[in-house]
Length: 179
Image 1: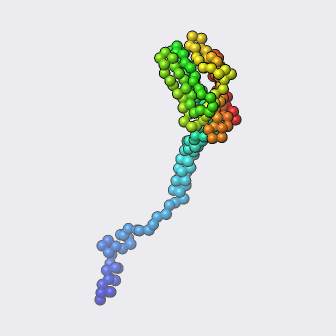
Image 2 (image 1 turned 90 degrees about the vertical axis):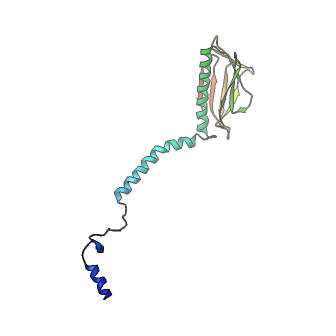
Image 3 (image 1 turned 180 degrees about the horizontal axis):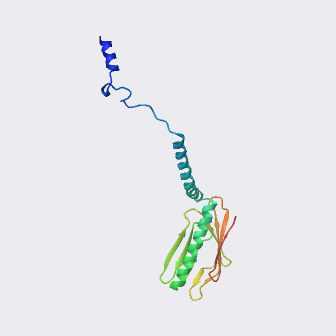
């Protein structure tokens, strides 16, 4: 009798008895090919837009040739700005440098006495070369640098020369990148 009651209840119609017409379908749904293609294209676009950023960050790490060349360009701009500032404010300065490979360039301003440093933060080494072993002084009255000098830029690990920054007597600055 009990089995009979269960069977009759199963075959009765209505939402109470959870017949297939009224119950929820609980099948697992798979992704379509179109959805997978859309996700793959979004990932491809994101990777193509982020690749130059990530590549630039990785190539400019300290010690690489690319970082040393970029630091040489930054140092050239810094020297140009320093010369422009000295000319505008009519202030003289000395370029202070110790011989050998260094990670900084020091400028001593006159009237008032101040120091300004350019630090490479390990991205390159600067080697100073001049024909005369004396102070390198900028004179604002004639806008000249006496004597002229050249800075050689090397990679910090392999000590490979990657650039030269030449400052002429008439404050012309020339950056030469060496391949």
